[in-house]
Length: 295
Image (cartoon, rainbow, N blue to C red):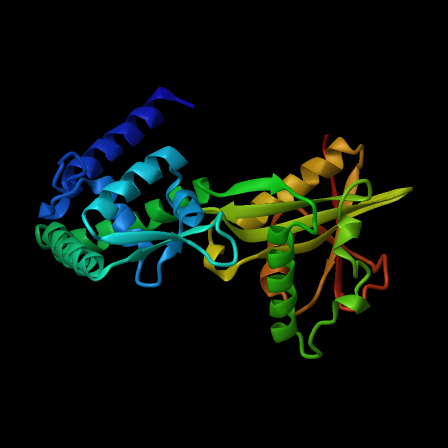
């Protein structure tokens, strides 16, 4: 990474930190620092599991525990184990916590308005557009991709969401038992590899590759949650699966897709896949693609 890019990111971080007041112990004029304020806001009206809070904010358990103890002492939250699994603790706002969270919302709006008011209309448009792009890119950078057993709960959640979406989009609906890979286990070792993408600890995408003796491997079950689209995640998952194919010694990789999945078709073509004659009898396929790999 070049030094100028690193220096630019550091300047940006300093400017944002100073402008929104993270350097002060009394964030937005409240009696708590930004860490406690952000945790209070993330708990939300419905409450949240401690593990989900840690994953959402990328904080270690010790630090989150210290923040929660401080908020408990001030009577703003309660932390209680769940009845069905006492290892899982849930944080909920008290009445005082909801009141302070509302105050944080109000003052955050005021700060945002103050920043925008100091600019003219053209500058405001440029700033909000730039912020949207920065938010998108920073979010993309927080996504992790991990190889998982296709029967892992996060894998299963992705696959179910994928099947549900296909059921909504296909005219005839979708029945996994009619597909060439009815059992997700076929995408696990030794016959394949399955990967899951997570954003803030939540599964938001998946894809698998299935190996075949004497022919190119097949990419299957590529899916990205609607909430994570626009982050380049589909291309990233595709590249990850292609890497597995290269490491297996494959010289090309194949996939098929349905005509209703226009976004997928656009992705595959832009990633170097070429349409070829049908190479299998996948029930839901209308387009078959192949790509030459360079190891």
